Length: 261
Image (cartoon, rainbow, N blue to C red; front, side, top):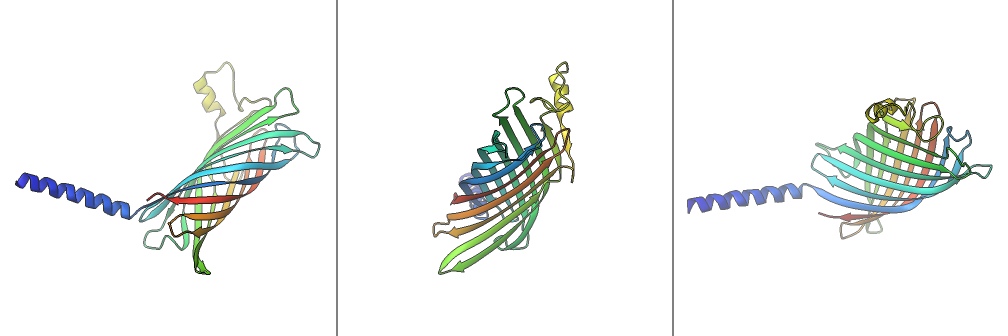
């Protein structure tokens, strides 16, 4: 009897602990779709700027704990860019980012939060007017500081939240197409795959390489703990090397946030 009572006590304690831990966390998934206004220059193709509109979609997850909030976000964008001479490029972008914001001993729903971010970006470009050497790409993975500002407010008996986030990528690594063709810089055909990997990886150097990101969203908080939102995003990037790559984009998209627990 004593053994049964002890087992029940342990089981009750475990359930209570799990319930208490779950009560201290919130999980939200968010989806978005919109349009991106994109401009870029890849000196491996030409010194001319290519501009155009791209469709963009986002899938993300937010985990709010007692002392910190975690964001995980994947972005996809695709579109056709053109220069002033009429030449076109198909441009595809894939990004995965995560943010960590700390809020120990302060409210997590209002005011400034500070933390850090990691960004992994992969861009593919195909020039539609070149028959040879028409494919180029770049990839980088970086770390840097991040900040968030939250402002909940009420208007006409409805709850809204304004959230803004900013990040500055400082250090990391990059792999970029070489001077001619799609092979990365320092790629050597006679070298091994292992050696080529380390030969083609270059550091992401502060000020020489740049990635600045900013987003601002207005959420309409629904009674179901879900939310609808409208978001603006801005990003500027520059990659150094034999042939530099520049890009700047603005996007506007609609958001749906769903509370999971």
